[in-house]
Structures are given as C-alpha cells and as structure tokens.
Length: 69
Image 1 (cartoon, rainbow, N blue to C red):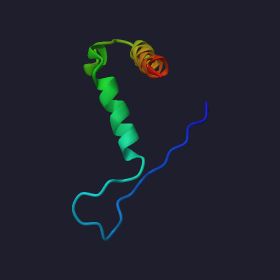
Image 2 (cartoon, rainbow, N blue to C red):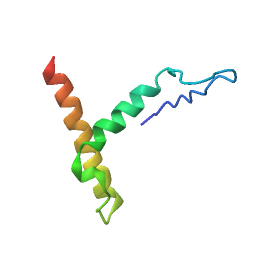
Image 3 (cartoon, helix red, strand yellow):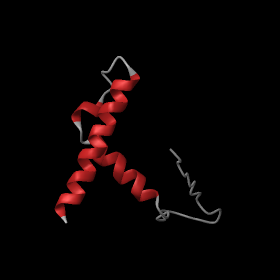
C-alpha cells in the first residue's frame, strides 16, 4: 500500500482566517468518522479490532457516497 502525504503550511504573511487548500477534505473525513459512535471512544483491547472498525466505518461512508449518486 502506497500513501501520499501533502503538508499544507500557512503562508508567512497570512493574517486572520484563510482557507488552506485540501485541508478541509481531511477535516471533513474525520468529522464523518466521528459520527460513528463506536469510534468516538477507543474501547477495543486490540489495535487490530480498532482498525477493523475504522475500516468498516470507512466502507460505510464510501458506500453511502456511491449509492447516493
């Protein structure tokens, strides 16, 4: 599995609120995953169980987006 990571830094001369490119995608995704009550708090004893629940929640989000079109 290959992952790409882009770090978006705030410009030096920026003052006040400024929308940064692509940052909203990550924040939106974390917000969607936060709505899954099982993921709101880590009750799992094994990390592989927590990872499996995270994958299930992600699959649910992808299916919802695919079926809505």
